[in-house]
Image (tube, rainbow, N blue to C red; front, side):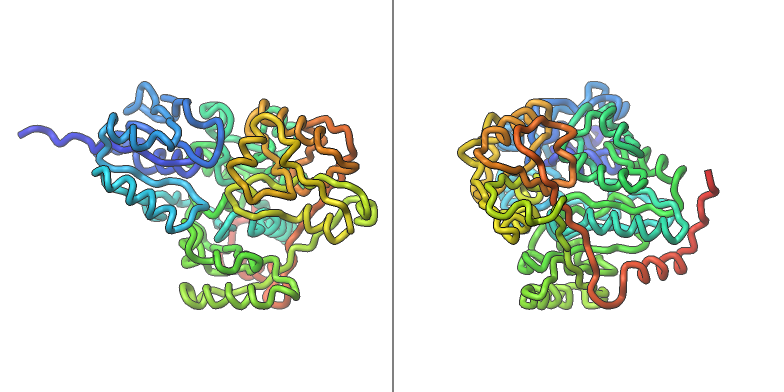
Length: 451
């Protein structure tokens, strides 16, 4: 009898969930042989190699990464037995379209779930995830971390991966101050997530290998907050699962992958952006929760917006609005808090499309729904330079920046930057404070000794 050969695998990803699925499920699994990754959504990941230092002894040459557009060609040349879909923020129809494309060519199509990919912590874990990108996870993570600190605990945030630099150097990262962001050469997208937290004294951990990352975080914290990316489900098994939905996009509460998984697993669903005008949207989200997860508690919340220096400074001025990149690109939103603030202030909003430079031209071609805002794209030094050139080419008086990252630390602009910030505020009961108190009573974490 001949020995059974390992099943050949291609992992479809976007530089995050794909690497985690490999590390946890495939890296030491001799029943499979991963022959390639493909990359989508995020630029500058394809044409690289997942390095041997991360891939492990079974992969002494590492694993090549190709653009997803080459998948049919790769199936013909690499002859995989199975293709594993491993990225987020796409419709269920999109996933099944990919499944049909793959299966029509012969291979199996696989999705890996929580039991196969979640790590178990010895410390209490709260997860903050969403049904879609841009729902408001990050402000909620910041708020919960602040509450836990005020209650005498030491939370650490483990952030969903954003692997845009050197994979090996980003194996396990720790951020406790702005100097760490500079030292690690963080992109705009990474800074959007890390800056608000480290600015409030919360240590953030992220990277590629989440077994190492979780071990690091457990040495410094008594409560772990998992801060999800896009609408992915957690890499670490939560004791409390909080999921944010968006009253402005109520029909996307279900039907998106893997956000619907989050909604079905949630202990608490936060319906965010639930202003007085969004009654119909709030009801539709409530109906969706009742349909798929009737046992979940529901909280409604608003996202109050503040303009640095006061909104009156924008009235009648020509402004360029810069928004959080992922929210308005693959997140699908046409605008965010910056546009809303500028509109409410009576500013004249200048369209940036015709002023786009370099790779930003490609962004506007890929996302034709973007008409009034500029996404804060900066996945590489070259793209950051394109962002700076684009901003300076737009004929305006003021730059209204709603990205959580401080652009003034990264680029030089010819016009003043006015920052727009947004938070999250619950409406009625229960409050986030009462939820955290009950959680701490239930799990009884051992407080960290004072340093």
